[in-house]
Image (cartoon, rainbow, N blue to C red; front, side):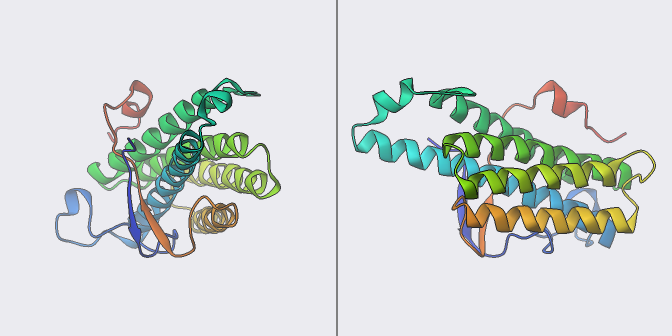
Length: 213
């Protein structure tokens, strides 16, 4: 059973994550922190959307009585079950990165690293979506857009930028928006839909390394 929930609303990085988050209490986050939060939330939502897409396809196959044959089908990443497992892992890591950002004290470099890690995990999920969709043109384009978003987020979080470089942050925001549009074109999510990130579960060691200091 999926750990996800979804509802209607806006889900692009230009829109802040739901309400004030973290140690600010009821105070709204600074524009810089809000931008990092929005990108991380968008990336985590993209990853959740891919997982939902894969789960939904598997459920349809099982209802049609094709689940057993599809399960044995081999791809470049292994069986379809392995693709689902990897997509689920990526979605949880992205959600965990978002949670770490929300819980930490405002710090541009750390906030940016969390947004970067969420984007990287979303890129991994998108790759699984591409494999699940058998390398279709739109799925491949969505995977490429997700990779570009991860690369742009990485550049914005690099040591020299420290999460405060306005030009790099703007590029990361634009790349995230492009990744959202590509995911919509691939059918992984619907235009205007806000997909809630999956439950974080038990945090893995690699995510705990993102803790703010």
